[in-house]
Length: 485
Image (cartoon, rainbow, N blue to C red; front, side, top):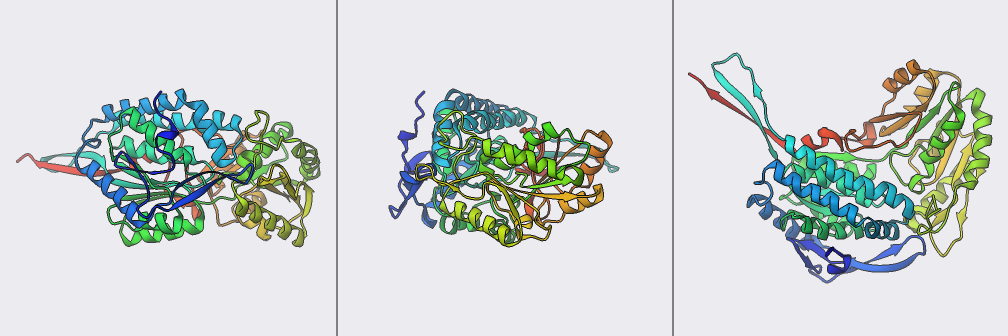
């Protein structure tokens, strides 16, 4: 295997080549488990972004990628998936160091899902075709699907590898070229993937990486007139801005934004099974995932029982060095994320919340650790309940009826994910239909697959990633009507 991170350490990947930033600027990459600098990467400016977009435009216009058949693009993307699996150990170690994610989860979740993304869309690339349409005219009508052009992919810090793949794989499968701006905190896997895609056979200029800050590199990419579509995952506040900029240029967008999902436990639930899903729903990835379940709604007869079980079980979840195989919860991604969690827990105390367990930092190796925290007895109008915390914090509230549970679940501005625990099949279908969310899980949490569309409603965004729906969002349809007179 010739692909190594050292072949392009911390430089920009533009037009198939490694470049320093035009002004030579660099920025630090911090290991969240120690708070120490592990490397530096190039800090792109507007000139660098423009160069990347021009390289992507040239690659698109010359047809080196878009001119290939869907089958040929699919073969190359299958090779990408193979290379991810062949280099799983190196990629997992890089992602763990960059994000602070437990190494075991990097293998089982991040690397596995990234490979699955490319494999799935490699297969779908074969299906890109048109259709004939019956019309009441003396003519033949048919449609053709084609790529949009240059796609700007902007991804966040929490799942760098997976959330990049969920955009890049369908964009490439459809024949587009890509300029990728990863989060400034976690750029390393994007740079690694640049080498890997090139080795798989993706032509120069088809995939470009510009590392840098959101206000500079991200803003320049959003506003570049050479970009034909924006695919964004991040906070709702930044997403609103990105969508408004896209609107100025009438560019299509996919927006996967914040979340604050409710997890409902009905009185007929299997409590023992529910507890595992509840804990996973708020500690996975240290609570830094938009489809987490940080709001637990429990039928009043089970309220004290569930809180009692959580008070005993949550402190036993292994928190520690992400490089240790037994670690389940690693550090927060950075100091600012840790401080945000601290502020919300302090606010919960002021709002009358009862901290059942956790509620404080964990002093370990200078890293950004926070103990998994359970908070009871907050009102539904509490800011801690209504706002996205993005950390390992769970609020627990009682409800007295199915209608009340649904009303509470739908009461926040968000609508990315939701879930419920019940043994009543009719209730499962009935409640799932009423919940305002892009995805609903029943008797589990965070079950995801590239074949299942994922995205939000309300302040959680619009458009869908995954599934054939995502592939369609990276294409444009042309209709051809031929007179037969």
